[in-house]
Length: 87
Image 1 (tube, helix red, strand yellow):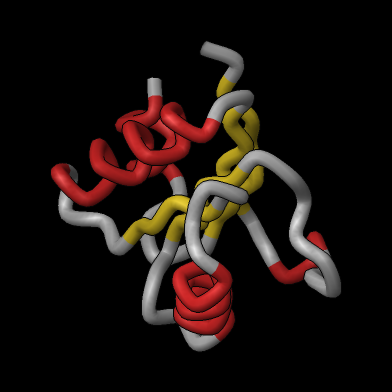
Image 2 (cartoon, helix red, strand yellow):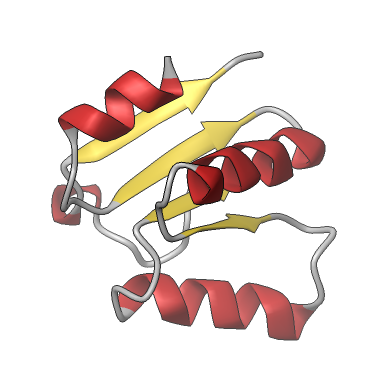
């Protein structure tokens, strides 16, 4: 499923919501294995790691941002691809 969604949204930024921290890591790893620039974002990361992921996403250094909660100060109108994974 994730491969199909990513393929349909090539050259776009996206946010993927996951229910669990471990899932955010697995999804980011899967996206990277498909050649995407992706990073996980969750409370288990240090403040410095979270800041770096957020900054990289804002500066288009990463394409997909996998997280548990909606980002603060980010307008969803900035993104074409936003979806949630429940598994």
